[in-house]
Length: 115
Length: 110
Image (cartoon, each protein chain N blue to C red):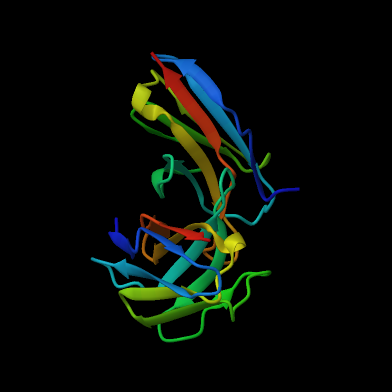
């Protein structure tokens, strides 16, 4: 499967600041990547679908102006959490979609803590 | 009703035991089904895809019942290293969005 990295693996920031999370597909050209969020003891929830060269598609209830997604190349998608608040503290995970196998391969996740 | 429902557990079993997890899904148009494994504070990792005819991978057997919209995972001869949360995952039918169950926690003890 595809190898996916995320950076940073964890980040602590102050309320009101913005944080950028990078998702890289190291060995696979990903036209589609997904961003998920997971709160403790809950399931992964899809936030948005990131498409290379076009605007992301956001799930219902996810604020597109707060969670900015950029997918400028086939190997990199970024998620920027703007004006972060403590309730944004979560585990953010990206995945790349292999259209051939219909499988998704996940990055190691980024743990965000907003103080 | 949740789109994918699982018993949260935990299932506490001794080494060598056989344990079964069940999952139901609500979207009859779903076409792809998976079991993922997630260790604490880690990303999910694909354990196996689930096919209509059922499939086996070593100690793991997955079954799909489309009529009942039910998926199962059987783990035989449990190992300590099997301790994890097992996520039932289905696609949403029309697009390749994955819907995750909340997971079933398994703890295998000596």
